[in-house]
Image (cartoon, rainbow, N blue to C red; front, side, top):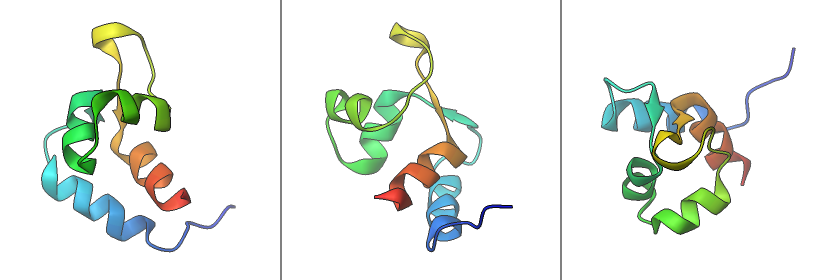
Length: 68
């Protein structure tokens, strides 16, 4: 079983605190959370879907943020 990266739980807690009622986040929400432009976050993170239906789960975002 793979181990969690250091800081994953802290990052996930931060995301859960900011978006407690959302399991999936839109590119705009991720951009607001990260303080980046929407175009930048769509390049950096593996969003699923196309157009207005693009999303990333909170756990996947936390994993990507601690990966580097």
